[in-house]
Every structure is written in structure tokens, then in C-alpha cells.
Length: 133
Image 1 (cartoon, one colour):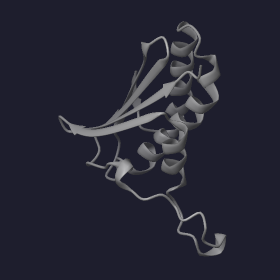
Image 2: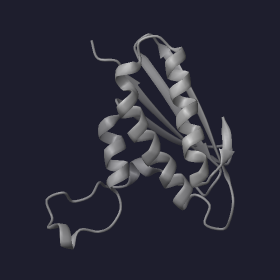
Image 3: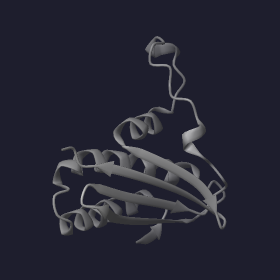
Image 4: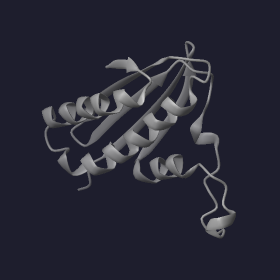
């Protein structure tokens, strides 16, 4: 699914991923984690990928195996690897913490595996979620 990189597209992306998951067997337990991680990734792309104007986001959702769900998020903004950025200092006093970084931190801790690459002019973030035995 490919849509404009806008807040108005969030619900369509969410519905698309949940529908795909519903068509797969046995991934219901992953829905809360997937929804939160997806929203964090999409809001970051919407907020930062296209500072000069409009752009698009593409999402792919599929089961790689009966236990593994893969979601790929692609944008054509400038190269940006969210996995290279340090997480927030959660030990610092709340009033002295820098703003931002918590969304990527959450995604890193909710996903079972993450990968990033800049390929053919696009940022490609792949997130895997595994069913627990």
C-alpha cells in the first residue's frame, strides 16, 4: 500500500496492516505491539522525511513463516537510519531530558528484529514480530 506521507493516511495504513494480519492465521497476539510500533514509525516518517514538501510512504505486510510477521516501511526522503540513533537517557531527570527519541526506542524494544537500508533512493525499514510459543 502506498499513500501520501500525511497524518490523514495513518488510519488507512493501520487498517491495511490489521486487515493483512487478520487474513493470516494466528497473529492476533501481536496486534497491540504492531499497532504501536507502526504508529511510531509512520509518525516519524510523516514528521521528518519530507521537510521540503509532500512525499509518499509504502508499506508491505506479510508472514514470512507461521511464526514471523514482517512489516516494511519505505519512504523517499533523505537517507536516515533510525537504528543508528542512541536511545533517550531514561535515567535523567524528566525536566532535563532532550525531546524526541522515545518512539524509536519503543520500536526497538517492541520488535523482535529490525533492519534498515537505503536502497534505490529510498529508506527501507523492516520490522519483524515473532509469535511467542
